[in-house]
Image (cartoon, rainbow over all chains, first blue to last red; front, side, top):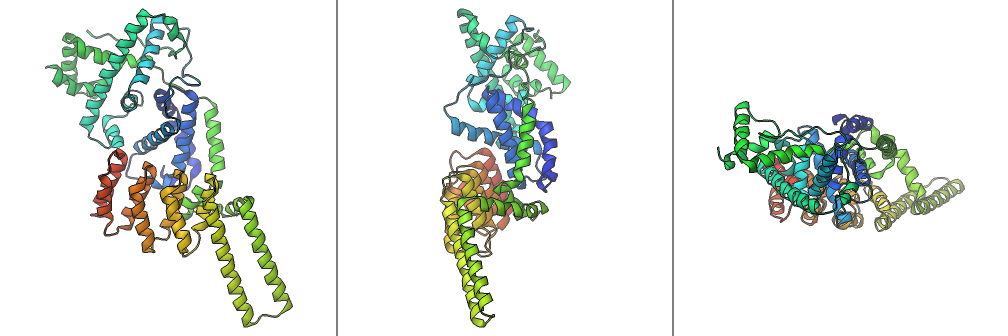
Length: 194
Length: 273
């Protein structure tokens, strides 16, 4: 990033190769919209280029990058509110190799995630899918590490409640409605606790 | 261990950053407590959601963006400020961009006319002291015309036209008061974050003028965009004005401030002290 900051703009390609897939994943988990996520990733890299002079060598690049990523998303929300989940093109097409139960669970899980408030969803996406450590998230949000842990735990509990509600509702309804939702390809089996 | 104690360990357990002994404690507790076990199960269930992959075209889009980037105005202002060779390479393009716009074309038509008259009068009469005065007055006329065009560009509907206006107006060695107030107005009220940032860039090059420093300091309270707020805070921290720390403290009291911005303000106050 220092090279990019010092004018070697072509070096941004290296950063793009390394980070664009995780960033796309971040946005797609937050928006459930492939087209919007692709646009956000492009906008993010444009902003990195524009504001490269604001990068300070003593800060972690990943934290700085996610700060811009969050701001890009916030600006997008301001532009497009009200939020439109499951909009134009949903992420991850259904895979025929998955078991029906896993398909159903994944679909419910995605709906539950989208029903979480934006800030809680973001915490779970950052800590679970982006694998950011709690201290990195604390740096990003400007709060204590302990506070991040508490908030992640609360977000997880709320997600669990929403998931259970959806699950009980889905059992009573025609499950075919869920078949249009995104389904993951091969996933590892969930290890049950003793 | 009870649920409360486990709740403190659980987040680290989920990310796999607990010591082995504590891992055993959590797992032992979850064996007996369905509630905590379900939290862990929920976390693991999230593995069902796949890592979404971007389309192959995204790299091509990025390349196109990177290729087109050096011709944009914001980069020119940033690069010019940092004095990079990269910025120097773009000067020719800046001129061409300017010529392409209708206002630019009009301005250069007038400029060419003035040059034509100048050459005509010089050919007719050999140089004399009165010609030197004439030359000076024409130079002044050109400068005021350039300012006029820059001011009108700052009023344009299109953000990219306004960006060009900002980059054009910030080039004078000493800012005309009218241009200065137009840039400060742009910094405060322009609808586009990019244009506001470019206005800040242009103004910060004239930091020797105290009213500009004051104007930039005042603009902080009114900004809504975190990016502009951070850029303003950085600028205040760089100048180290005596009242900057107090301004930043007042700013920190703003309700609903973005946490990252608040953190930046704290950092700047620390730096100023």
